[in-house]
Image (cartoon, rainbow, N blue to C red; front, side, top):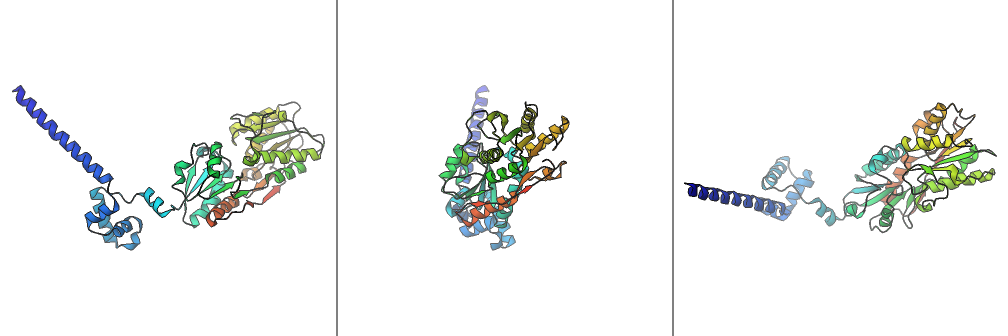
Length: 368
């Protein structure tokens, strides 16, 4: 009896094994189906199959539904998109390379306004966007699937700059430069010179709260640390503008009065603001490289009972709505961020090779 059950068990195991292998073979066949295979099985042309998935207007509704149902039955999910892109040579997708991780960038009001301008133009031209984090490892991961790159700010991972410089796909940079690649910029150095010149007085004690001036992940004074490369850092250009303006009124700003802030957020800015306002001697003027930083200084000054602008003058940069609504309103440089986004998209789509400076406006507010 036991031997009989053993033979039956073996028999059923063989059946299960055969069924398993049969299913695996069927699955492998389905995954290997080509457009030609499907067309032969359904008795139609490859163009009919392709139209059913990609150009529904070329078939009647009834015919398209029939084709799609038959494709589903045999396990064909449609033409391979990657192969289509490689064959056609274009995807209608534009890669937007961000300076930092995506979570941080999309929460930044300046970056959000830029993205709005860029995507508006891309959408008008029926282009899609793919966001790529600036702290990623290899731009080659997406290079085959996009028609070009808009790079917003110098990526944290500096290796990406070299990869972009050697890209065969068109590239446009924003707020930094790569040799022989068109860029969209604001004249940051001149803008900062003008705003500092309008604010500073002879014998002022001055502090500068900058963004990513040195290679540091924390908020700290720069002292004599080497600055990030000029071409890849708008903060460096802004710093040069501030220092040049200070020199015109006989003020020398040393490294112990200059802070670098790793990210343009309240968390990082508040530490620098607190250190600057408790430093000795306390500054008469704080020049901030963003409105978000300036708003933190203004908030902390109020908490400490420091009168603005009587005891402390504050300048920002960017022209975000909150800076213009707050009281006292900030003196700041208003960038045309949406215009920068539009200009970057237009430059890429039109294949332009010349760089462009976008206008800015200095707003004298109540903080100075």
